[in-house]
Length: 180
Image 1: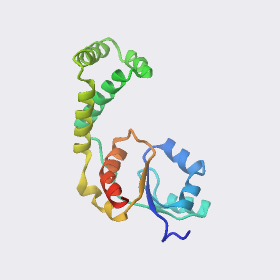
Image 2: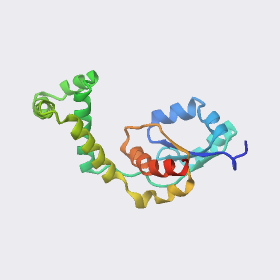
Image 3: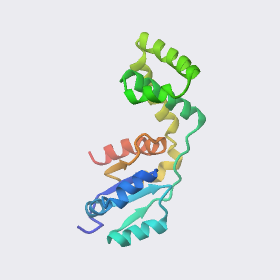
Image 4: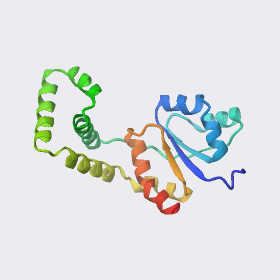
């Protein structure tokens, strides 16, 4: 299948483990065999894209847009969302992390989370927080050019990374409408 007839996908790589998993595992080769692969990464530069392409005998494309930054407000909203999510779904590993934080953190955050849970507001707050985070991180002006690529899909290698989230959320509607 030549690259002009392949569907395009976007691969987001924002952490070193994703780089190792996707590139060094060899997953990139069958992916590039099936799709025309475009990469947005703050870890992989054009020189590395060319080396990877040459090594695997494939053609990868680098998109040079800056990844969005996480503001202080977004960080606080995400921490709150994470705390409510872990409490609501009773994620055990979070309890271990919380115990390491100390008495005052445990007391204050625990009291707030208990109140939210007792009032039955967890699901509502999770929904509201998700919508706020999406609204505040949808920097459409910086991402506008991505719509013209007509991607059929996006692979987020770090789905909890807000920078990847903002790109996925921006492209979600465009991909859905384009491939209907």
